Amino acid sequence: MFTRRIFLAGTAASMLPGIASAKKAVEYDPTPQFVRIKKQFVPGQLLVAPRSFYLYYVTEPRKAIRYGCGVGKAGLEFTGTATIDVKKEWPTWRPTDEMIERDPVAYAKFKDNDYVQPGGGDNPLGARALYLFQNGVDTYFRIHGTTQPQTIGRAVSNGCIRMLNEHVIDLYNRVPIGTVVTVV
Figure 1 (cartoon, one colour):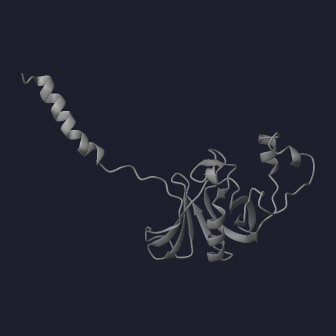
Figure 2 (cartoon, one colour):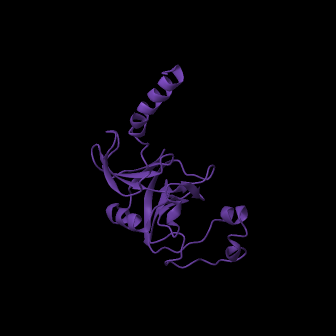
C-alpha cells in the first residue's frame, strides 16, 4: 500500500543526491595565489584582512597575490596603516615587556634581563621580518615568518602578522622599504 509516509521518505531520498552535490563551503587555503582585488588599492601596497586570515600584495590595478597568514589574538591585533621601515633576514627577537607581563611562564628566560634570542630556525620571527612603523616610530608589530605553521589561518599571536617561512621570504623579496601596509 502506498502511504503518505512512503511518499515522503521516497521524496526525501530522491533529494539527497542534489543536497550532496550542492556547493561546499570554500576551504581556507594559505597557498599564495593571484586574485582580483578592489580597484582602490594601489600597486605596491599590502592589505591585511585579519578576519579572513589573508594578506594581499597588490601587484597591479585590481590584481594581488594573496597569502595566508595568522594574526593577533582579540585585543592584541594591529589595525590601521603603517609603513615597512626595516626588513631583516633571520631577525633576532625579544618579547615586549607587555608580553612578558601577560605570560611570565612562557617568557621566563627574558624576565629581568636583556637577553635577545638570536635569529635562526627556532626564533619565533622565522626566516624574515618586516617591521611596521607609524610616523617613523616602531609599532612593535611585524609581518614575519613562523616556527609554528599550524597557526596560519588562526588568531593566536601577540599581535603580529605571521606567515609560513617560504611565503614571507617571497613577500620580503617583493616589497621595498616604505611599502604601505593597511590592516582592516
